[in-house]
Length: 165
Length: 446
Image (cartoon, rainbow over all chains, first blue to last red; front, top):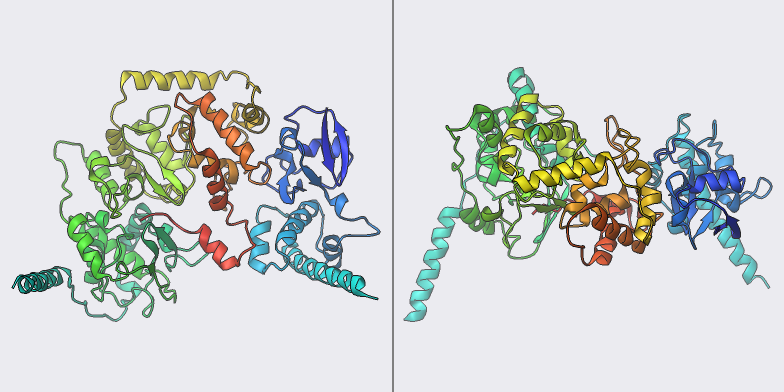
């Protein structure tokens, strides 16, 4: 038994140390946003955030997660209250089949957390490990820029509220 | 009186060095028409450019071929590669063949300025005239790219090119390479390529304090781009001794089942060697096998033991932090006995683990092996995001003790931290993107 912190909650997990995080998320915790693509850490569809960094959950064994904080797409927002990154992807209609998009959003989220205003080539470099067969790449780029603007205004309005009398 | 003598000596010295150092400009020419070069000559030049790995330094990642601008960090400062496309303003479009040949043989540009030895003319001086001619024909028939040279970042007095004349006086020895009539034609072809155009020693031979290859340690291993270029002589760290057949497969395909994959800065070399005539790669392998030398009985036994161990791997013992990580993260592929890309070689065969320098292993664990577009290339996920420095260091300690017969590495904490800094630069976008991308493109060749 080990404790796995996912989206701010502790879960008691009974898994072998070499079990990939992806299997635990999908099979044990029923968090199905992260997708099984290649199983070799080569397509990006299984990406989640661990301690602020985008991680390929299909090649990350449980032994490496002791004491670390895992965030999945479910932890960012919900269908009724989407996070800025999710809203931006919807508003730009960046998904076609959608299989790669959860992973794309997670890595974009990690990027925006450490660099709130990335330029085009930074987004391209960051998302390079993610494969998309449909070809919505240009929309994905626009969506990441839109998310950056949404997060910016969200912060501003939060400041406004705090400073309001 | 004494002062007068000293001044006279000094002036005489300056005069003499000036006579040695001064090189005239060679007149500009009108750019030759591409059709003025024989197609066969251009084709031969393309092969030679691949053997010389020219594109590796003269092209910025993602930039136009041969347009230069790649920063090459050296212990003395940063030198930027030059534009060798036939652009008339910023490239070599107005260089005559004589000017090109002089640059190759003596490291002097068309205007007579000394080139820094980052351009490995200490090797290129061995290239035959007819090969220079073919290289010239190939480069002059490429598309011209307007790309002004970037200013080198060198401190005084090294920013004075005249200083290079002194370096050449000490370390550039034109015309010393000679064929060995007692050896086979294949051996001699290999020697000519390795010591000349392919300039293998530029990375694989350690350098002295003045940045020249140490003649008493030829092929004993060097540094490039934060990687160790392994010793490729009798001191090779490879658990299984190299032979000509293994070298040929490795250089041609970038992989050999007893040795693993050629990655890091060697990836560009094997990419180029995959498109040249097979005979040239055979010749290089044949010569280098001789440089490695026949393995001693003890060395051969050690190799056979490693191969036997690789065929019947023992179960991974998860009795330490590093062992637990190995068993969970590495063994599923490296002990799967599956062919690449689903499995990797058994790590008992790894040169990186047996080498005295842990940097290559740290680099690979952190950054993994990224697939290359349009190539049948090896893959491995990087663990930079999922392992912290302590976990990587613990893994390295375990790998070293389990898979090599060598003493433990020291200073791993710093080495892992440094590897993380250099290998993840392309993912670190906190700084300006242009700086970030140029940092990853940097070369550490003197």
